[in-house]
Amino acid sequence: MIEAETELRWQVHPRWGILGFAGIGAVSNDFGKWSSSETIATGGVGLRYLISRRHGMHAGIDLAFSEESEAIYIQFGSAWMRP
Image (tube, rainbow, N blue to C red; front, top):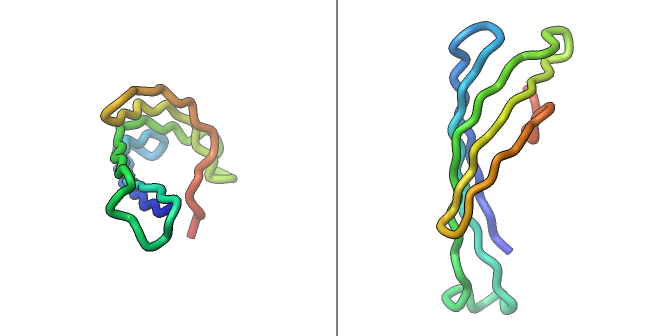
């Protein structure tokens, strides 16, 4: 499996932020034969609200999509490490 993701957030207000994200990935049964694997790209947009300034905790909602489906996610916290 190989996969890459990115997320860009714009803090439009001290408590509110909007973001865009994208990812791409592929899976193969044979490490040397990536040409036979299907590559899937995904992306989406989201909205975040800072629910705890003290802990840097955000909550929000995302709309994600790929070629085959769409999904709505409710987020608490972050999948990314804070600096």
